[in-house]
Amino acid sequence: MTEMFFGFVSSYGLPVIAITAFLSCLAIPIPTFAVMLSGGAFAATGDLVLWHVLLTAYGAALLGDQTGFQIGRWGGPRAIAKLGRNRKRAVLIARAQNTIHKWGGLGVFFSTWLFAPLGPWVNLAAGTVQLGWLRFTAWDAAGEAIWVLVYVMLGFIFAAQLPELVDIVGELAGLVSSGAVAGLMGSLLIWNFKRLYKRTRT
Picture: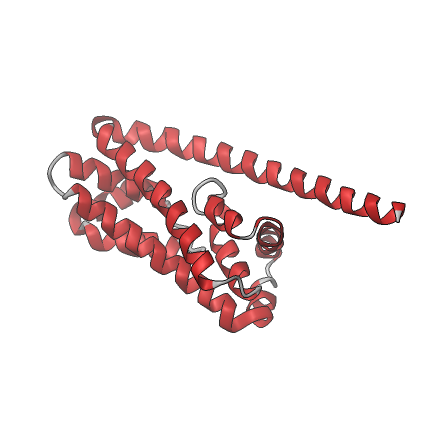
């Protein structure tokens, strides 16, 4: 599938980067990291302009996150209930809600790059709990800057090894995300146990 996206980026350039970055922020299963890497690689060869790639990916990601946030803000619990009918989505939504309740804006920041699989659901949860728009936007903008810069610049620097880079980054991203989610869930469990312990002592 990643080779197919290489071809799309090669043929259509910035529109493909924009569309994939936007849709991935709405939980559409697209290998966006491969597209970002490809965009950086094609910028290195002169087929695309680097700052165009960075700006396009960044703007589309912000727009996607804002869309998810507004869906949560205006759809509220009804949107959560409808999306949560699927068991896998329900688990992700629950994790996202815990992230927002525990970490607030900082949870939004980390969900854009470190906890990437949770990102779309954190946007939705942030809107549902009426997290302040300016607070959400500031943390989201900072996090997306890291996400876009890392992937595009990796593709730019290692353009000659793009296929190998995609395989390596895909595996590492999965490991990092899994480890980060596991760490987050562990911290939430510890926090809940501490709260329960304090209640039993009072």
